Image 1 (cartoon, one colour):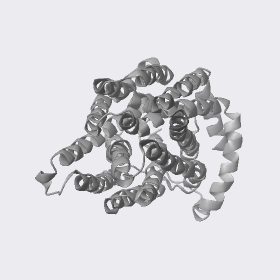
Image 2: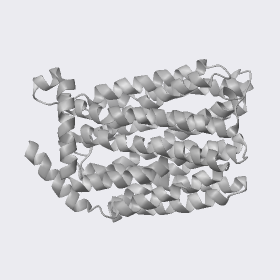
Image 3: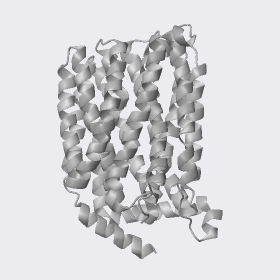
Image 4: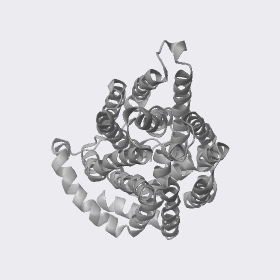
Length: 428
């Protein structure tokens, strides 16, 4: 395992600082609002919610099918950084192109958003897999949490600037808030591009010695993918973890993607919802670091349980809330645990997989995460349409959190580490 190199660690974590601007300004913040009030201006609230959920689900479904194959190809050809560059460029380009979409054109907006999501999610497969190239096992919880923490801070800083632009468009020479929001998509693309440079320059990927693998990456990758299914079957604790992760991360991702839309649907003002997102970002920065320490002291599994418990409380509260101040309190609660659940899940998974097949196994990790995101937003929107009440949809997320926690309880991390090490040595 590599030594704890601060330059490499910071370079790796700064990618999270950069691409999290997409998650905050675009995915969680302005896109849902702009989609509902500008690109779907003539549609009902329930109809636009369904369209937004469908766009999220289509993007996730594409990642579901390509993630494991891409991971296997990248491992066989030592191409993690090349794939990261490709998907980052795709996400950056499509995000910037949202600036060009005119009022009422929800179809084009959806298409660009879907492509941007593919770039964002696809890049994360290879970003996550590079974690093993920058840090050893003793610091993996902390460094994983550091990435999420810097993501909250970096994404929050740019988001705060973009919010200021929309509230004071005249200061920047814009005709109004709509033009400011459109310009914010360009700012995200630039931010993402600039902070992608350090990981490309300073994080070195271990090269595979067999040149024939590099010449036949795709063929070798598909062949390796078939073997991975068999290996996951052998690593039963990996399979068990992935099943539990699939369920509880579905609830987490659905709340991230649909919270603003839910607030609009139950009558809250867009300005207040944006403030709530900022609260989540800046509470999330120190909280993610704290969860990294919890992972080091209590273990990542116990930290995830704490986060899931808070999420269940938040979901019940969201069903009953009536005042905007409650949305702010819930936003703070989400900020306390969101980064912790995500970062500790990543570091726990890193412990129980073979290190020499990290991109391949993270392909499956992201596949299940995105497959969860296929189900959650559409299910929440569908329940809202059927019941005629958006509150009913959010309450259904409790099932996902509870079931995920129950399955996670069956994962013995120490046993998983031993089995992963044995498989890694077998393939050396």
